[in-house]
Length: 509
Image 1 (cartoon, helix red, strand yellow):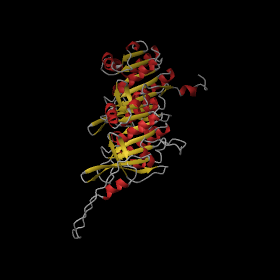
Image 2 (cartoon, rainbow, N blue to C red):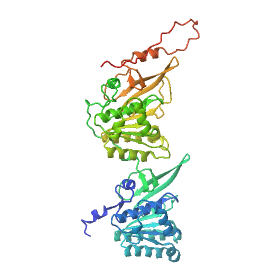
Image 3 (tube, helix red, strand yellow):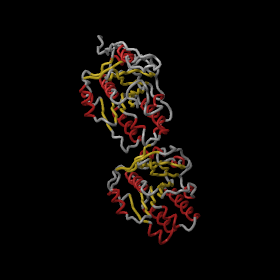
Image 4 (cartoon, rainbow, N blue to C red):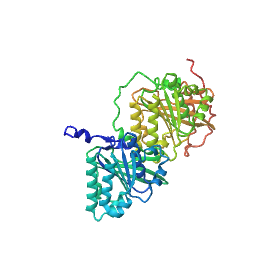
């Protein structure tokens, strides 16, 4: 190999078998490098090692998996059968399993080193996984001997063009000499958060290369280790976009759109803020149906109500959402936010947006997405990154959030700080008057747009959502609210109150 070819060779990447881990490593392991994965028992080291091997041989490579554990290979492969990446027919052909336990016990580190060199050479392996490195470390006579073993293995495999992955139990001392002898270090952990256990991964070292720093969550299922890089670590900068100050995207509710001067700006984010039952979901469904009529694909992504219930709700108010769903113009997806990872949910959401080329998104419920197990300090950055990604993909987003106060003008949101991140805020609330509840809406905020800030009464019936023509009915209800009596003032018999008549008229236009 001449000097001109060497830099290109040194930059070749070996995919890890996990798309998320490839993202953390900026493409995968460096060809011929030596890497170490540490973690307590049960964190997924062995699965990750096998995932690498099966992925590598599926792409035309050759791999050797050497274990120093007392568990037999037959028992280990039996546990791997449920994994999608597992292919029994490649075992003994392009993937070979060998045991180093007896050799290590009988001949020590020197005998183990010879076994590894011979296995790489005889099988022409381009990937070597050594599982149970802690056993080799404990059998070393000294720290120096173990370091020489690691150094010799790294040099031999680099010359042979073989990428090496060593799996070991987590070490408390980060300055352990073994970590200095490898090109990269990946730490797997199982962290307790209340009654939950959350798996995390962190690339703490990657020699000569950049990596995504910090901890990232992952889970283990039939696909193996699924790593979800933190959204804010991937999308740290706001998207470059050209503002369309003329175009609007409405809700299909004439008087609400009138209050918004035609609707919301394209690619903006809108928060529907209100108490339970105030009409947030129904208003979001109107937004999707209106977009479908204009040829803009929409996505409902929620956490409580299923598609049949939502469609029945739409049918009950005369909203023709069902034809849009049947034709594929609106996609409805519901996820149970129980024992789920926020990063995994967002990863799936963005996948749906890309697959269906979504232009309108209704995210029904921020609380399940931004609360447990997401750390509170992460929530603002997490939401900012999500909205930036959606904006960069040309998506206009409407989302809902519940308030703590059921009645009255006081505003208390469960997720603080969100109001400064979104572009537009619409407040939906109940007002009690003479043993009856009335719905009110008002626009609190619209970036880069004029709007009508006055409160308007609205109702939901079998005829749909009906917004009052003016603010007068809302004013009549609000001015009729009881006020506390001044105890220092002599009680007088109040005049007979005239009950306000909330507007139910539709626009003549």
